[in-house]
Image 1 (tube, rainbow, N blue to C red):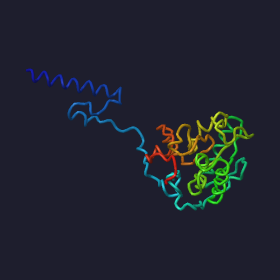
Image 2: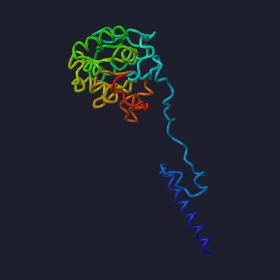
Image 3: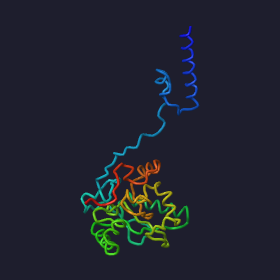
Image 4: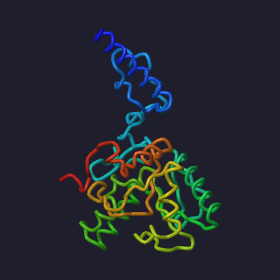
Length: 252
């Protein structure tokens, strides 16, 4: 008799759990006793898990290539073969890879439509030789230690990938300065760039991870899939998202 009562009680618990599932699909399958769990396993409702290995992190042709002080371009003299002129307002004539260019055009247009204001390209693709000249200028101005916090050495620059762009306000305001983050352009980009496949590459307070000081004007095209996933997870850098470790300085 006692055995029968225990069995009835167990069935009642299972029945209650099954009823609960209809109004609370988040109940863990593992909470159901015995074989009942297998029979009522909820169907996965979410999308497929993001595949972090879908694209190369080392091939310079990849939209996901990670370039930092620990990860130079290979070869260091790499030059994209699909560069196009970006048809947006600019200070220096911008060129980017075709996919990044289209995304910039869409993003700039959206900003102007929403705000009535304008942005412009300050700098985009730079070749190995151009980066060599830029870096030398910073070294002359700040010394090598100071330059390394602000500018990449040739062969280590995101601008050389054809996927990075420095953006400024039009008319100019806080150009290439931290205060750009407080402009309407800077605030809009920080909130919306991910929708167009871009990430803020050098966020505030993460110099030890990226190797560079806060640059609210420097945006990197990675494609909408990755930018959306980084936005969803709250990951701020490519280094942290892909578990690559910090890149505070160049290898000795």
